[in-house]
Length: 92
Image (cartoon, rainbow, N blue to C red; front, top):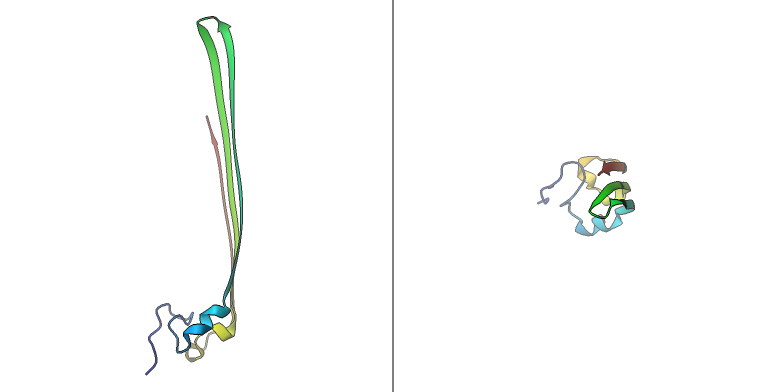
């Protein structure tokens, strides 16, 4: 009796659970956080203050599923997933 797949077409839960070890994942994160605070004393009791910030978060991800890591009963071919995520924020 074959084990039932938990993710259709990707062969997770296939007859050979060690086949999943052939899959590879590569993640390259890039993060930049910055903050700037400027103060200027106009009078002894009065000052001006400016705050500025910037955040950049990027992530490149490559997932590789060779044919040997998939369930042969599904007829799936090798698979490669490329993923790029970017987020940029300005704040004050």
